[in-house]
Structure formats: structure tokens, C-alpha cells
Length: 195
Image (tube, rainbow, N blue to C red; front, side, top):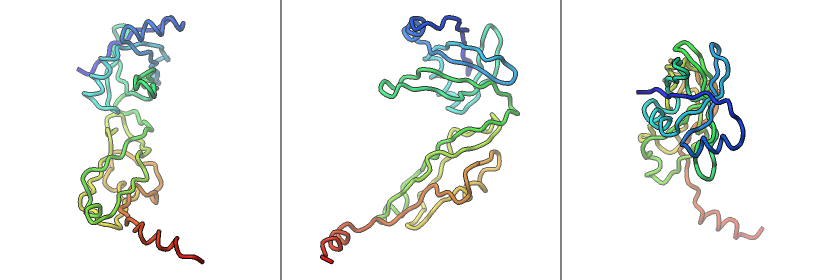
């Protein structure tokens, strides 16, 4: 089940945040067109289960005070050292809500170019998209298995493959390229020559 049970937070002292954390809960806010912004808390373990079920960009149900509303994970703060989630923003959505968000670009496979001595250069790791809540993908996958040295994938190349959401990056932006590896021995020889 993709439901998170939330409690409204009314105590904002530092001690109350520590209590929340010690009891396995995360502070959060929920907002949207049809809901007043509310400070809430949710169980960390439940959040991780729901994200595993629906994905990072999936729609989840938030149950607050006996009322259910559909939300997506809009933003979150992470502790860079402990890798724990410190705070979450939920955005209330319906199936028609259009959202601007970022989606990861994942490369799949080992390219023919790499096998021939080339190198994969990924210049964009995320794309900015606009999509209805139901159409937000967890990621955009590019299979590079058949790519030879010199192959480049630009944003325009992906736009024709996805028509259920809009990619907002410029068409000319390069996502990946399979490049030649420079011969370092030749470079050393050139740098050793006196001018």
C-alpha cells in the first residue's frame, strides 16, 4: 500500500525535533492548491517502503487527520555525512496537475566505443521536465550498447522518443558522447620537445 500516515506538528522547539528523530520520524510540510500548508511528521521506515514501491517521483497517498490526499515528494534535505533524510516537502497533486521537476539520466550497457578504447562522457546527469503527476518517470534510460566512437546524444534526440512529457532543456545540449581517448605517450613526446 502506498499510503503514509502523517501527524500534524504544532511544537517547533529544537527539543521536539530531537524527539521526532529519536522516535524514527521525519519533519515535513505538505502544500498545494487545495490544501493550506501544514507542518507534519511521518515515519522514516514507512517513507522508505513507499518510495521503494512507487519510485522517487511516484504518487503516494498522505493520510492526515483521517483525510487522504495524493502527493509527490517535491524536495528533501539530506544529511551529507549520515545520509539521513532531515526534512521533506510534499506537493499535493491530482492526475491533471502539471509539475516542473528534474529526472535522472541513466546509461545502460557498455558501448562498442568503450570496447574499442573510447570513453563515455556524460555531460548531463539530469533533465528538466514538465509532466502530469502520473507521467513523471523515475528516470530516463539511454541504452548505449550499440554506440560507436564519435556517437553523440543531444536533448533533441530524446525529445522525439518521449511525448507524454516535455523536456525543457535546449535541443543542442549534449547529454552523452563516446569520445576518443587521447594517447598520453604522444602528448608526453610533444611536451618533451624543446621549442
